[in-house]
Image (tube, rainbow, N blue to C red; front, top):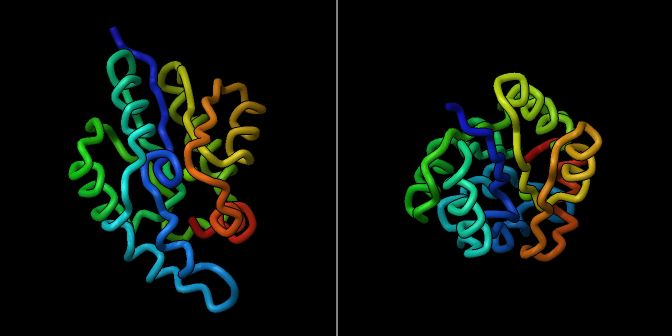
Length: 159
Ligand SMILES: [Mg+2]
């Protein structure tokens, strides 16, 4: 019997990116420096707990707006923090669409395979877009509002 998917975001849900946000604040955004900080992100205990809880009854999938070029650092970060083993879906390196568009597109691909029980994300725009597409959403609130990151994801389509 196949289990339904549970889809969990990374930045702001599992990973605390607060310390590297300054690289993309204001003008002269340094995306390479921003992504280079991935290995040093602290983990949110709330996010790890929810991922473990969901993994008991679902096939977990991590879905992030991070670009593919961050895959090695992202996967080793997940292992190092004891996150459940699961496939990681990332944005194509050349994809500059808003995060909510990229993510809903990937969610629809997953939903074509089998039911998606829940989508966990911290970005209100991603949450609203996923809900509008018919997905059940759990909005993660343990990371504080990060206008710079949301701006990057929604307007600049960079992460
Ligand atoms: Mg996020």
